[in-house]
Image (cartoon, rainbow, N blue to C red):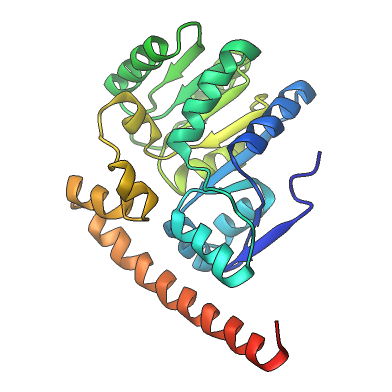
Length: 259
């Protein structure tokens, strides 16, 4: 099973053709193999940051990467004419894996976030998905771990033997942490999920469904947390400009060379 057999390039990041069902099928295969894999959930901020962050771009292209942001799906369709069915976003993917894991016997470990968020996340998920196996959590301090602390964390995770390591440290910190520990942490599926812990624990409300489907989830998040305005203003206009550039180039080529 090769998820990278067919990919599309979005501003230097190679995305495979995925939907939720194919992603879950791939995870099932990986868990049976017992080999460590990194999964990156990419949005516009991730893609634009990768233009200047060479390390992040390398991590994204060496991992399984999904389109979290709806604008990336639009780019895939309008620039590449790709038959992308849906985006695969972190909070929803997490919920589907927890749900599917009940019958598969999958075990989950949550790394990142505040202690209160992790406690509420475990409580909410075990109530929503009776029988789900959440075998460990860890809220790291807001500083770089010492070598001893880092080794202890790796040892804890490996001793518990989860199938999924959900990492909520924020991008790109979570992607770089997973990449740096991929050879030491013996977990088949290691995923950076950003704010999914806050969403799925109920600490932050997700945007209404109509805003999610229309690509306006970022606006809803700014209204909830104005501090995000700086981040979105730094990346969204760049993405929009490059998106429009590539649409114009593609349509020009089609006019010159034909469909």
